[in-house]
Amino acid sequence: MHDLPASTVMRVDDDRVELDGQELFTGSLDEAVARIVGLVATGGRHLVVTPNVDQVLNLSTDRAYREAFESASLRLIDGAPLVWLAGSLGASSVTRCTGADLLPVVVDTARLAELRVVLLGGDPAVSERAAQLMDRGTGLVRAIGLPMLSSIEDERARGSVDELALFDPDIVFLALGSPKQEAWYLHWRERLPDAVYIGSGAAADFAAGHKSRAPELVQAGGLEWVWRLLQEPRRLAGRYLVKGPRFLKVILDSHSSRRQVREAQNLPRGMDVHH
Image (cartoon, rainbow, N blue to C red; front, side, top):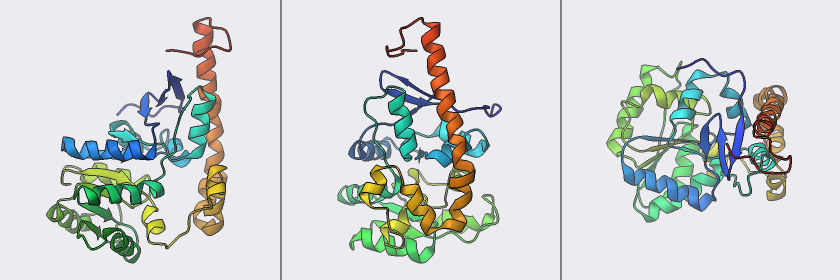
């Protein structure tokens, strides 16, 4: 891979939203699910990433996440600040698709289409509970655990990979947390069965009722991170209070890039930019 960029930039062109040159999906949750089912139909292995602020900041520091982001077949927008940034750059319609929202809707759609779904990794009891609740006796939804791994290369994962291949899933939710889940996928992908792999983080925790989502008004106000911080202050304080403010540079660089393009094309300030 090339050297990591010094900064990450979002650009908008005729409602096409790009992050460092890679297109972000901006449609509705239902449209995202339809796109995922469409990827299943094409065959092969596909990765779906759901970038939030933390993951966007990883683009300039984590080579594995950068590679995963660039190679992904679909990039959904999880973080509310990304939606706001896209709107401030001129995008007229951008929808937030979180992993927590995506998991139950994808499973419902997959179950009706008789597609097999796996929840891979995470707390075994929680993932098993989530799978049981969403399976509804069909046998189409299964939780497969991963042992405590010393690294993404840990060969103890091989048994889980073999079990995954035996089940022959169509869709796999990776519940290892980002950027570990994306790095794990990249390392093991040549041994993984053909399927759509979706980075889902803590989505199974919400599906199992192990953790509670923020109230809708809190989500709408983009303050779900505060809710999660109050629930897990020791684990999330560094992410939200130390690392998170660096997203301001992404905002400033994105608007600076937009101004530069406008000035280069000698367009009046109020006009949209096409580049």
